[in-house]
Length: 453
Length: 173
Ligand code: FES
Ligand SMILES: [Fe+2]
Image 1 (cartoon, rainbow over the protein chains, first blue to last red):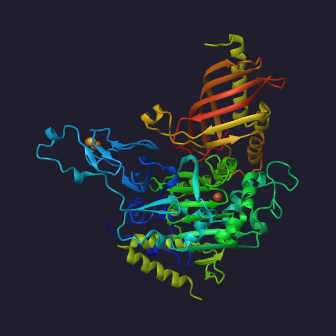
Image 2 (tube, rainbow over the protein chains, first blue to last red):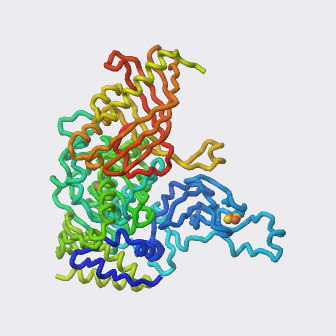
């Protein structure tokens, strides 16, 4: 698809201006499916969700249904969940175990390796001979794992996963690599839909600590343990019942290559006040191991928000990991997973699940308020004037820098929009470029511009 | 079928209707009083499982949407009272519809009963946002000397949707 849309006019990241038509325009959305979701590394599922041969998990890459299958030799493949005969889905369950995927329409059957193995009435229906080798399930071009997380990518020319992640891997390790045994997914997947564009959610988790003060005021007020509270909070030495932004020593935002993160420096290995006492205690008990593996900053970094561009987000300390599956310009489907250290005791895993659900499940004390905002914004943008009126994205502009202390990437104070500007710039670069080389060239030019003194 | 008398069934149904009215009328503290101090209040996600997996009684793992004790329910209500609970600002209008109420005495107990019922919860928000939640609920209720004569000591809510088609759940069931 060629485009006549002037993305440079819609996204002026240098000056901190974005025109909100990017959240509503169906033509832009179509282009995103091709050039963002068709070319970026997308989170599929966790290895712990498909432990045995024949185990499968169904998800989406953009709007394309994709089934991930554990092979007989233990490797992982992913396929477009689309029968090659007339496009029917060949796997319906959320997950399970199977020896074959049989299409319900005319009964073509595919092995777990994607090969077409059975065609009903083959010799009578295809007297000329059907070359079954040609009609296997379409395999996702590239599948790669990073410390338990499985990603897929349709683009041959994309950078490898590690390069794509760049400095974001350092931030992600703060969740994935705290302990020897790695992580696993606890329980199932919470799924709900929000009538808003996927970029609101992705951007917020990349860049927006600012909203928490106001949006989540009610949750902070009722979930914070009081120091004299003898309930299940068990505040540790040095842990404060005050919101972390009031007590933190320092706070950083990171934003680069579309990814983003924000977090506070705390003095004690304590998670947010809204997690259960067992979770806080667990972080204290395992602090030394985490520090040995990750260093002090990341071992203490238990309150933070993150997006790996485009649609995988997570919160440190709160154990929620989610994907924002786009469902049209005006709709996103949230898939929330509870991720925790594999070596944690069962009662701690249960506490992680309870805490993640209570704070960030669809009925979560904090989650409720976020979706409310996004839904209302999407309604406002139905208006012609509203969607063509540039938005202010200037927070912290000009204060970006690279740090000397080992915290990597382009950084700023947490209350800034560095990561948001970078996210929209990378997004526009993808939409304007015909291949990854061009994308990278554009992104590098933007980075140089951002870091100019 | 282990049924109860018509009079008792009527009494219990009236109690359940009354309890739902407290939610519909935003009398959340009064509703909380109807929850026993040992209440366990849950809602699970639903999943799509292959029939062959179901037959072997394996299915994709589910997870919680609610998993609350009385303290947490109280905190939810406290949140609504802050005046900053934006998901409920302005508050949703709700209609809790209960049907197919089946009452079974709890074995070995004089004053506890298990209830199974179907529900439909209609939620209207802002100008024209509408949501329906349909499913099955299992309660255990206990006769007490509280205001309504009964309290709820267990509530397991099942929602029939796999993907919730509402942007959040900020109402109670
Ligand atoms: S569509 Fe699958 S067999 Fe025909
Ligand atoms: Fe939020």
